[in-house]
Figure 1 (cartoon, helix red, strand yellow):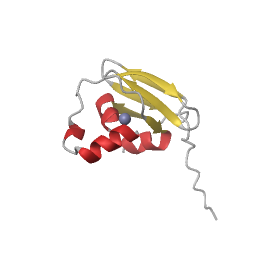
Figure 2: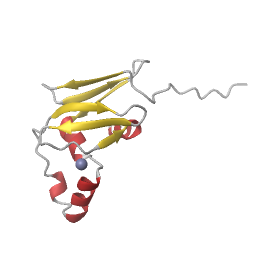
Figure 3: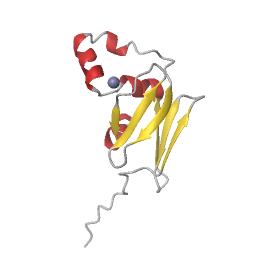
Figure 4: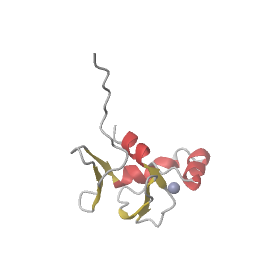
Length: 105
Ligand SMILES: [Zn+2]
């Protein structure tokens, strides 16, 4: 009898790479799994209070993110996730690992 549901542990990726030319953020896990997210997609998916408030007030503007926006830096917040810094000066967003993975599906 087998009841193995041993899903690979994908809590923490072991590598995070910013690709500036293709404007993608790549997350790689030890088992070879990887996801890739567009910088603009990440910027518009920001869940900080400021962005959430803006989306509530002006839903039409929420999609009006500069399509050329770039991810300029990332700050690791350990088990929590990543803080992302964008070329438009915005760096308030905390992106939990699980949220990043959900954006890729
Ligand atoms: Zn934000």
